[in-house]
Image 1 (cartoon, rainbow, N blue to C red):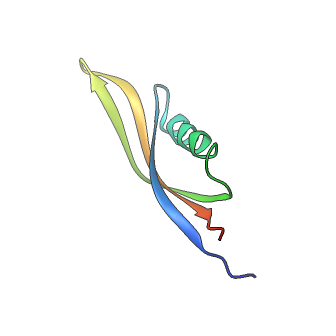
Image 2: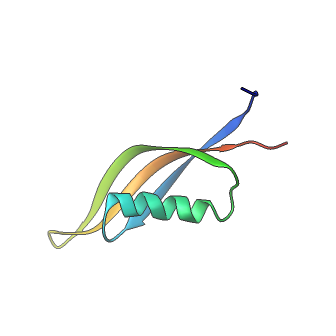
Length: 69
């Protein structure tokens, strides 16, 4: 295995449907400007609530991508 260096960033994705959708939205958005995304670790899940009803899902994730010199 070759040596590699990875950068890790934190993202928060949102979705009106699900936590999974929120994670996918975060990765899809990040992949437009970052290359070689490798691993996503979900670190926190939460909800937005309005008038006693769930209105949105948020997923906080740490994402690693390969560092290129």
